[in-house]
Length: 466
Image 1 (tube, rainbow, N blue to C red):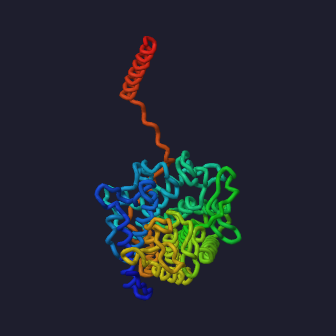
Image 2: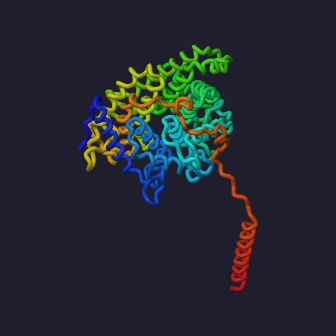
Image 3: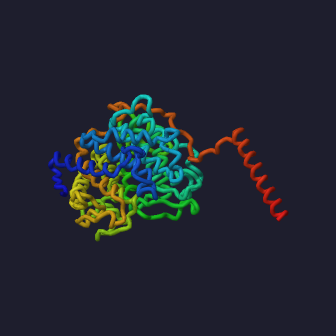
């Protein structure tokens, strides 16, 4: 049977969220014998999901835990996140190099940072810690080797130069870097993170990935044209990642103990401490106004680039997860910039109510589809989508209704316990050095050469005699 969500009934919200969390975990195989912890089945053609989507799922369950209080899945989340850290402990596992983007790495880094901010149980002391992992991801992306002269700076989409998409500099990669910098500044009190976040924002603004008139957020551009020919497709997660980052910067500069140093560091930019706070508030307000205008339709989250009102669309396995990010990131925005609550929370509430109404499919009678405004269930198999994104979206939307009952994300001075390492990470471009040639390799090559020469000589003699 389907859901009967009553938003004023907190117990009902928890029950509905719990059911959605249970349905989502059934699509995850990482806790089964012989399977890989942390990832959904894939990547294609082995399964429909990419590596980064496992990180997005882990973060969704962390938010679910902190908003509902249900710790049922915490062990699986910790297991998955620690399993995927990679050989250099920076969320760049070798077996995913062929599809490794700055955004892919960033989604895992944001999951680790979310764990630190929300007092998710710390790993054993002999394992990497959540803050350390987030710092490692940020540091690899902050290294000058990732920010070349093309387009006057900015992160590329892909990390290894041989990957398709290396010539593209997109908003989500740079937006995640900006977002993590703002959050690390708030958590650690280290102004270096804030300065790099400001620089990243200035680059995004300078290449006009944010429209200077409408505040629409565009997808990116190619380096061949020096990022001057914009791909003007608008996705909700691009706008939401920037809005949440702006909210964290607003929160950071609002604290008296950091205002003075932030102002001093920005004197060459003509920014007083008051103007710094007002500037980030203005940016956040402008982004939110555009988000509500563009990505909410008939009261519900709507992925305008690929979704239609008639229950059809062109959303792919990436895009069909964006609504959940929109809900989760806006909910946190309302916490760290509390003045936005009256604007954000009613919209999220109505959107969640619309979302659950179409979760009436499948044998369970509660499977969710992608098209919330259509008013009835559309089977993901018919829609050409994948399933996990649809239920993850609704899980995010429903559990986020409890955001006001949850603690505001902490810092290392307000209850944060995660241990950091500012020297974690570092230069890593995803290019794996060739294995050194050993004496055994040389001996083996010599033997193969002798065998080939003998075979060729024998063939020559045979042809000559016969």
